[in-house]
Amino acid sequence: MARRHLLDQGYQGLRMRAVAAEAGVDAALVSYYFGSKKGLFGAALALTANPPEALRAAIAGDLATLPERVLRTLVTAWDDPVQGEPLRLMINAAAHEPDLVRLLREVVQTEMVHQLAERFGGLDATARAAAFGAQLAGLILVRYLLVVEPVASMPVEDLVRFAAPGLHAAMQGPTGRPRSIAAVDGPRGTVANSPRPRRAH
Figure 1: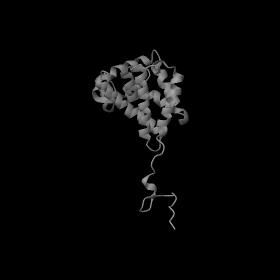
Figure 2: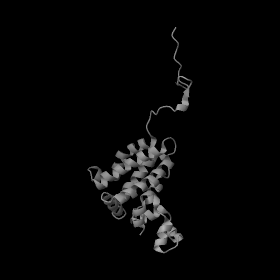
Figure 3: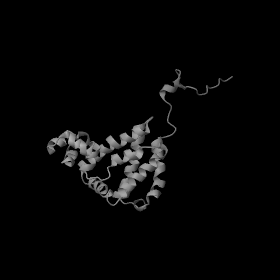
Figure 4: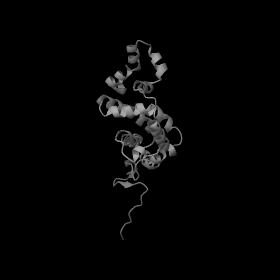
């Protein structure tokens, strides 16, 4: 029932009260068992490892080692013979179900990118979080859907060693950004604190 609601209404349109009403139970009971919309999403798709919840646990702690923690959490969950099976089935089904693709896109944007942006903070946090998430999504596709070697069979720690630098770069954002317009000084657009050109004698 909840799965049908998710596929019909999307993640944004899912209402705990609507699911409860159709099931003939009090909305408080749905909240008690599933906790939140994220919990209901995991249960509706039979996910024993719920990606948004797993991400929330992984991003807590030191930012300096966040990419490594996220990679280990992600790959360990997807590799697990029991917990990973529903996740692998979900990604394979998404290749054939447009409604499921839409649902997953909404979850990634609403929950996962938002969580990462809040944790990163600072300038361009959402763009950096989206770039970080895109690399993770690419890794999932290559390892579990396309099964591209040697990534598909690479041990977790080797995968972390190869993939973490790219995630660190996404988290930090591009270097050499142009100065803000607020730093411009004077009518000719001279950047504040920059050396003044010398006059020719």
